[in-house]
Image (cartoon, rainbow, N blue to C red; front, side, top):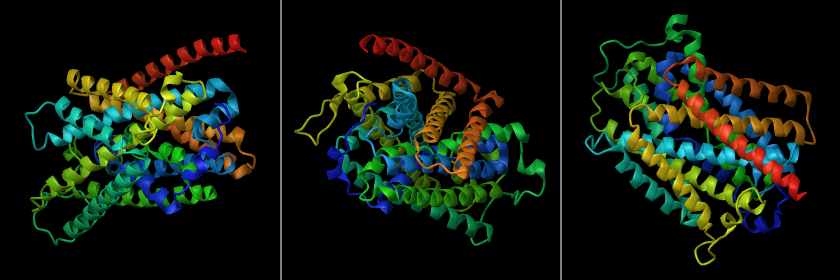
Length: 447
């Protein structure tokens, strides 16, 4: 991408670091944590806690490097700009479109998850009906503009965080015997390797993708970091955000897996609802289900917002058709063509949910997580080239982050039930690679 001037965005630099942290929590906590973690628990058992700890370290490495690049050279295109700065136009182009595709898959994954969760109350209504309703609502939030998006995301972040804290309080009360009911036999804290790693090392390896997926959302923060009043505070915003997320994730999942057996968890129900289902809390499952729907809607809207911003930047820099940079001044500077293309992606997800309702959530979630990690790899290797100040410890840190990402991606090949997601991601990469090669020839002809 070309060196986009930041002067145009200086007037919008109003965010404080804690606001960015809160928005980060809002963009991150979603159905990847509330629902997809059930798949991870089924694959590895109580050791899902370790999967999340490793994912938290890997996520911190990625965000730290992205924030450092943003502080040194703040740009609208964020990680895609840095990829181009490091390795040339092909890198920026492929990075941008890989992120766009991963976000579309994330939106599809969230839509299907929201529809699955809503069927708790309306089991006879098809998935695609609910998917359509949530898609329309998400589009309306994005149409509110930047200020409206910030306010909605901050409000939803508070609800999501409160839901997790309420579960932690109720789970502790249940374990202490303050709430009546409960399963006939509680597994408690695992005391052997076989209990901790229910499906062995390969199950643990396969579960990593779902832990990383639960931390997806930092890319939107990278795109928003340019709006910080003090851009040097971007790393602090990320540290606080990830510390809060890691504590909430690890504590809540740790409690869930000690309350009921691994066999009780299933991909169509949140592990937190499962954990408290045998206790006398008649309203909890409904209230928590509502909180999860809010969480999924929030992260889906954040992904829609992210792809809208990125496509405008890609168009400005000639990496997407010029029509996508057009904005409607009369309506909060809305980039209507960019929003319309994202809507096409949402419609494709709804049609997919209609045609393949059985395993599609697991496949799309896996593919979305893998494409997300491809982008994170771009961030790390770009930082190794772009950053002016690179201590040896940071280089080692970056390589460790890459190893974690490679482990999470290859882990999807270990489990038959999620393996198709890996091949879906490869298909997307092949398409993007083919288009990049074609565009590279055109760029050479223009030069």
